[in-house]
Image (cartoon, rainbow, N blue to C red; front, side, top):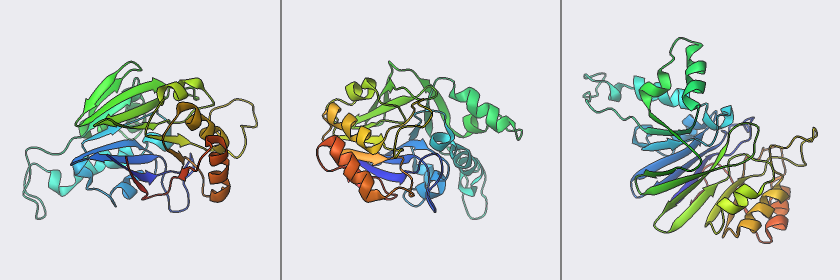
Length: 262
């Protein structure tokens, strides 16, 4: 199983970067976890988007799902997906239509957004959309996906992806919590957000600091920790040092294009 970072920015994109998006592959099966703003163009640098088999979304904040919209337009409008020959493409009776595995209520959200320009069914036309719940276990090709709700500002799920006895756990966005620690127990790789240089000034928590991210990975007994959702305005060496201080061992810092074999 290979995990490739497509985008790692927080809610505002890095210069030239993209928000949360990860490509997970096993053999010729391709799973995308999250598809935040800016991610679709970056995803195309690594894979033909018509070859993506499934997309799983952790929560319905723009930096985790908004590039489903350009992704959908690509699937619906590209010449090679048309039913008749177009511009050198032979036409097809079986256009690619990836699975879209999203939290409860996601369909209502994407319909409301797309209806603003009169195309309410855009996402459901391009993807085979299905909803999951916290207790669900979903099979996607060689992968088994499990879900655990974690505390954030809206309904949010960590996603655990396993194949062949190997696991990677995506922590999504969350405030300090025990739910993620328990869910990620013994994972081979914990991909965990480390957004903040210090806790939120309002006192209302929704994200982690790099030190807290490292602490969560240590508590879970993760073999490796990958810190993500970090702005390019933070000193990367400071982020690594703080994460390692919490983890008790070196941590990796997500960068676009970084690939890790699990």
